[in-house]
Every structure is written in structure tokens, then in C-alpha cells.
Length: 319
Image 1 (spheres, rainbow, N blue to C red):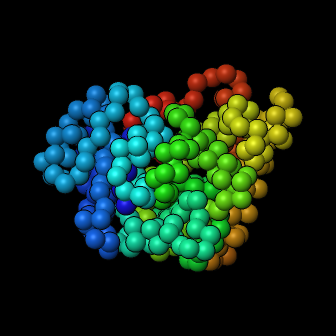
Image 2: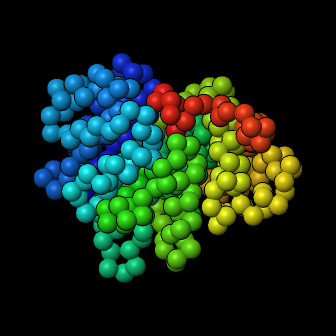
Image 3: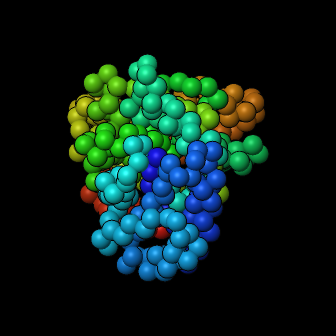
């Protein structure tokens, strides 16, 4: 396996602690260290101190420098092209993979009976045990990767998945600086030809949420912007694209009920996985409605021709 770690998720240009945690977790995988490599993709102009830090603290890590301004999905593709492993493991700089992550992913992708096109890992946000906001974060962002049993899923998160190198090199992510776009289109292509995407619960990945209502609101606005942009400008094969194109000027108004329906359905389906009792479920449902309102503001912003609420190339934007 070749681990590919992008570095756009470093939120502080001078604090590499999250990346060190991510790399430490990858170095402690249960597979033989000699059978894997770790590639860290770096924009040396945006992060001039990072290559030096990596060379000093992680001498076994391969540093791949990309042109200044290279964005998230371009970093993913560049890492795959440079990789030597048969399997590409995508883990972001703000994630912590469980020791069994790589072994579980490789086993899933190399099954003799109908191996999946993509294997996706399960997300765990520790504060979801006690925080309604953390539970809402998991539902709005990673509901498709919450679970305790293996199942098919119709989404991936490029921060926590694995794929055969030959596949991703021949059919790379579309290199769009916006999140919620290329990953959705990738899954659409896979499902259209009868392929499968499978959740692998043993490939657990810790991804903490940003606390506070302001952060949740910002994520919601950005999601709504990207959601409507993809449906109106992206592949017409993407789910809901035809509906939103037919709605015309009413499209932004439809984002809030659509987002509510998607998230509330996921909340009900994943209640047990989220360990949400009746009170928790009601509280999280209220937060999801607020988040859907935030998404509608982002959709209106897009439709009005305004710039996105966050600069996609901004290396400080948390996916």
C-alpha cells in the first residue's frame, strides 16, 4: 500500500502536530512496514517549513512537492501517480487511522469474489459520545461512513478510502478545487457501470469535528454552495442534477428541504451507530435543520453569482 497524505488540511501553518499524529498512526499499521510507503504531498510555497520538518522528524516518508496552488484533488492524483504500491490509501493530514486500517482495506480490495471499486473507512469522532454538535457533524459530513457492519454505500470521502492504483491513475478524480464534487462524480461513474463502494468498519479513522455553531454554520454554507454548483454545472448523471436543473430560479429554495430530508433520514438510519437516544435524536435533528438553513444560504450565494464563502485554494479551509 502507498499512503497518500495531502496537507491542505493543516489549519495552522506553524503547527504540524495533527500531521505528526496522522503519520504516527500510519507508521503503526499492522501490515509489514516494508510493504508500504507513506507519501506526503506538499505545496512548498504555501508550507515552506513543512518539507524541512518532515525530513527531520519523518526521514522514511516520501515528500512529493507539487506546484504552488495545487488543490486537494490534484494532490490526491499526484500522489497516486508517484506511488509504487498496488493499493492507494487516502488518509488526510487531520485524520488518525486505526492500526488495522491498511490491512482491512487491502483485504477488501483483493477479495476474489467481487472486490469493491473503492473501500471506505469508518469515521469516529470521539466527542460524539457526549456532544450533540459532534453527532450532527458526523451526520452532515460522514453519515455514509458511520457504522459497525460492512455494507454497500453510495458515497466516499477522499480523506478516508482506498482504491487500486491502476484504477485511480486511469480514472483520476476530476481536479476541481471545490469539495463535494469530484468525489460525488467518482461514485456516480462507479455505480453507473455496476461497481460497488463498500464500508469497511475495521478501517476506523478518527476525525475530530470543529466545535462551535460558527464552524457548523460555515460548513453548511460551503456545502450548500458546492451542492448546487455541482448539480447545475457538473455531470448530469449526478443524483438530483436533473431535478435542480429543472427547478430553475427555485433551485436554491429547494436545497434546505433536500438537505433536511437527506440528513434526517441518515440520522434515523444511523441512530444506533451514533449511540443516540430519544433526547439526543431530537436535539441532533434540530441542529440538522439549522445546518440545512445554512446550506440554503450557500446555495443562494452560488445562484447570485457571489464567490464561495471560503476560498477553495485556501490551505486553511478544513474539509
